Length: 312
Ligand code: CP
Image (cartoon, rainbow, N blue to C red):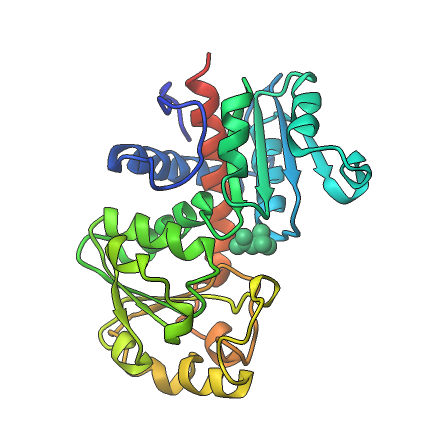
């Protein structure tokens, strides 16, 4: 468990883009040290006793919301879970007014998921509390990328020199941006693959190789990250039909033969089974999807701890 008083020298965690390699390593090492808490009969440490954390979710979430809540509780913080649909947001209260009112209740950290890219950045400038981005629009999902990196580190031993391939809807995926940034920064060779309509031009600027053929993208891959088709963010048809999408870009057992020996398969969830991934792969021996979910708690404990430690 984290014993020394390490801290992030920043108030907020808004994305992977602003983080240095040293900061990424600090978060991953701290997360590794928190993992043994999950194996204890009493899964709790007193580290954040007396601190208040507000989880503010303006979009649905299963994994991120639950694991931020559990992470805070395992650190003994007081947790307030705010659901926008059951609040005065439905009466027209603005995001800023909502957050300034909640901030007057003296939280140390506000975790926010919001459909608008940049919403956490706007709040970071207006709030004294630390802001943690739990996913903003199509921009970033930094704690997902950190838990993905921790999972790869634990399964493959290191990240430098690995071939990491992301396949799917990169255009609407905040996970994709954060993953490309973190794996490139940690020395992996990153390939992205999908229909040309779902690969934004900026992927090359972020350091990824762009390939449109799935078999080529999978050749020699050590780690395959499948991305969900984000129907809720798509306003037009980006491919002819789900059946054709699965045929060209769905991950099947047969396609896994292209990957490197010992390759692992990841997915941030929720899965669209039979759309981007076949059930036999999602539930098969290559899959580390549930390890990702378990690692989410340790990563979020590390982020909450390191941001709090930096602020006295
Ligand atoms: N990976 C992820 O963000 O999942 P949720 O939407 O369930 O939080």
